[in-house]
Image 1 (cartoon, rainbow, N blue to C red):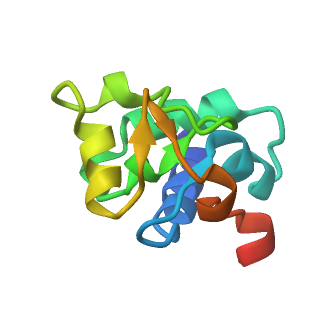
Image 2: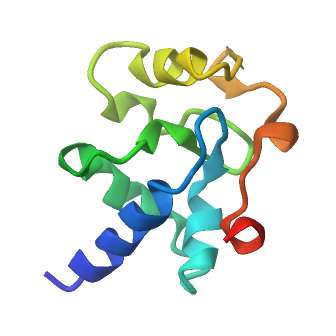
Length: 107
């Protein structure tokens, strides 16, 4: 599978997102030199449950939990974020700018 290497790189970056912080699909894509591939990052994270990846820490560029339907249960993504102290209201991360982790700057 041609995407396997890219998916593995996505997992490696996502595993570095600190507890209680969030990033975006686009930020991971940009870091991997694949700007414009945010959707592919999302696809990679959809299959990351076997890789022990904290995919719940990845949201869209506006802080919305757009990937929440890929988690088991109704609100698992939100519950995981809240267990790390991230406030979520109406499927949107509060204090997005304060909690945002940019791999281009942090790594």
